[in-house]
Length: 197
Image (cartoon, rainbow, N blue to C red):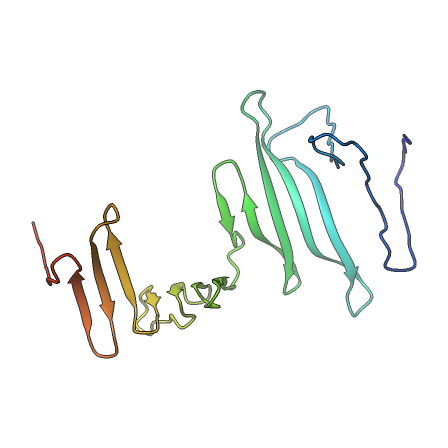
């Protein structure tokens, strides 16, 4: 084992692996292990305790951090320690937090940039679509804008949009639409019901 008391640079002239960590242990425990150890004599809340930076030149020849992974101490108190983990990427010249994991929440787009969020299923590229610029949500569709200024939930399917409510795997109640009608339907008896207190 070597110990270095100053910075170390490893340089390669090709695309071969620059650093490889190898463990030959045959048991079921973790290995190899990479540890980032911030050994501070005065650890404090909100300390940035480590980061991985992905850097390259821009077209002006300047070193640019295009992405970064950062970790913070949120609470340094013995017995109630909390940590935070950020994934950041460059957006229009500024590093923005795209994923934040803390002790109390997991947040996508903490930086509030105008960016869409999309979940793709096996057959639909927009199974869940959050329109970042218009503050609307689509299910099965990326077209979920509303010219009236309301926040909307748009649902699209092969025969129209549908919201289904089910209790204990038995009956279902639907709110669904086709090209011309909006329907509320009870699958138990086929009734159309409106109820008030």
